[in-house]
Each structure stands twice: as structure tokens, then as C-alpha cells.
Image 1 (cartoon, rainbow, N blue to C red):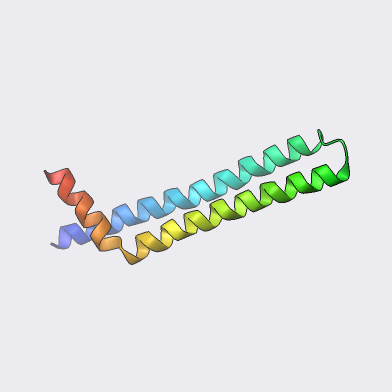
Image 2 (tube, one colour):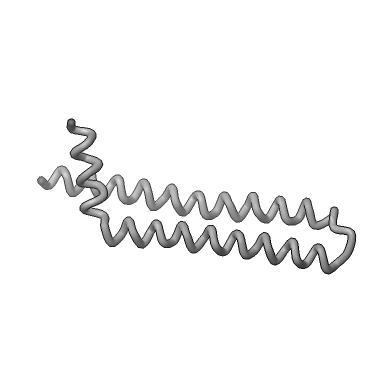
Length: 89
């Protein structure tokens, strides 16, 4: 049983780290795309609307991934115990 808790904690830490890396990666890519595309806008209004839409998409994505982190934290035992059972079978 103690070994299961160690595996569950390790799997949780791995998944948490991966989600944090996804958040950072998406913001880096989104920032690069917004900077690159902003030079293509014919006027300031279109540029500002495009930037606002991109930032909103990033915020929604970030809140979704944070919701995944909260779900994993609240249901850590049930999620990973089921996963360990499937691996054993």
C-alpha cells in the first residue's frame, strides 16, 4: 500500500509539471504569434482587436489548465488508483 502512495505522488507530480510546461509553452507560442501577426494589421483598431482576442484565448486556455490541476489535486487518489489498476491488469 505504501508503494501505491509513492507511485500516486510521483504520477501527480509528473502530471502537474507537464500541465505547467503546457501553460508556459502556450503563452510563449501565443506571444510569438501575436507579435508576428500584429505587424500585418492594416490599422490600430484591427491590431488591438486581434491582440485582445489572442490574450482572451490565452486566458481561457490557462484557466482550463488550472481547472485540470485543481481536479487532479482534489481527485488524486481516485484518478491515479484507477490508472494503477489498469496498468496491473
